Image (tube, rainbow, N blue to C red; front, side, top):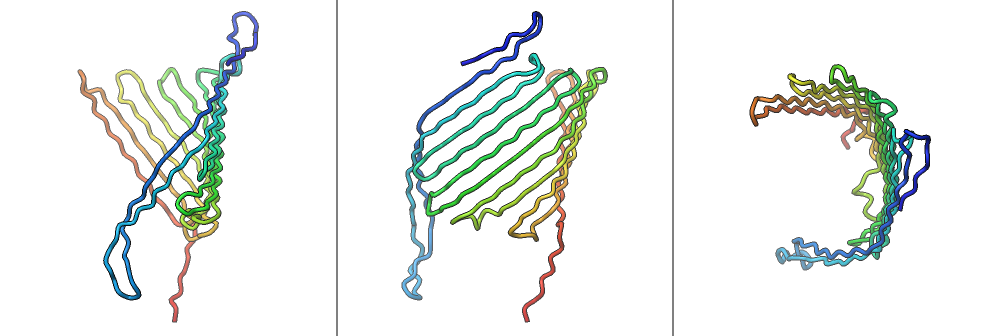
Length: 246
């Protein structure tokens, strides 16, 4: 299903396309594991334990895709809803992208998700949110590109099973440079820095710094020589002093 808006002659029209999906999903899972068996203090050995579980859900999906600025940019919005006997989930995501000129690209991609999981004895509720936004500048004459952006993440969990999933929030920045000119190696260099905080466990708060380098040479014929390097370093944001018990 689509709709378009008329524009002046010679200018591309913007459009919107919708997609709706309805269906069902089913899943059967059986976890097998060994556990030690005891009677009072007598060890009887190890026994195999199984935990079968069947799941079913109704699935609904609605998505829309369109363009703006006479085709200079586009946007996407999608919502996925799953209503099951043990797991319920709803995810909303979007993408906005604008290329007003051949040299500049702007984009943003947010996502929010809620999940309720009552499988295998849990009763876990999760909220997740993510955002990634960037701007890219292309230098057409020199076949070079430069980009920078920000990232953000949020996770909150509550209920039975949340003790294994720590709440956290994070924010970061990144920058990169690329080159792909005829007769020269393809080159990409990127740097990123992220700060993470854990409200329930502040000793885990840290900075993470990442760097990457990719280079690619055409060795002639069908031969290609590639070099890739990636490194990461984490540094604790708070020094937690532990005192020995007397």
